[in-house]
Image (tube, rainbow, N blue to C red; front, side, top):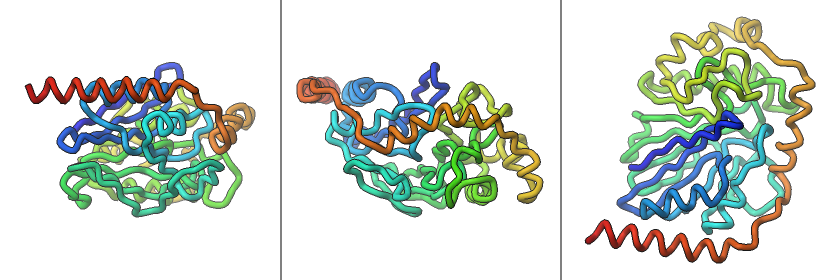
Length: 269
């Protein structure tokens, strides 16, 4: 299995390339880097990106999910409640994606946004014993996602608290990979600069995940001024609509195919 966490420092954002070399396929989750970077990284390992997934409609950056799907021919998967206005495959709680020996399962974790999902990762179909969870903007290292981003059903502190209980119930050895780390406006002052953790560690040392009830959680939830939120909502709305795509993708696709073929030829030599 191939698992790469890719950090975009200017945004304090993390995205993920997950692949199965035996099957020659890969998926990208929450792409914030350029589409070409993911495609070249996969091709250099003999992999073809067949799926692009978003945990939610991001508000702090313009997603490259559509561009990556267009470039590679991959299927774009978005949470059903995202209300995206372009072609995609909607996914619901419990939806699964098989990538060779790797299995991803969607876990609906609303609160930060109504559509938000996390992705539980397992090998060999062993979902009862997952090795990692991509938590998006629901759970960070040392903190949790904002609960005041939107005033919509399935958003807000009470819903976020319930979603965190779903993540908290995962085995303590499950590795935690969020979409942001310290410096992002999507969390509070407790966000760590570390880009990964485990469920067990967060249970013990993340006070928001350890809150004993909703009232205690609401006291601990530190919300930043509303003006900071209004400034970034434009990106969420842009991510739901039409975005222009580069015209050179046909040429780049041919180059990617040549890179994959060379990599596989070298591996078999």
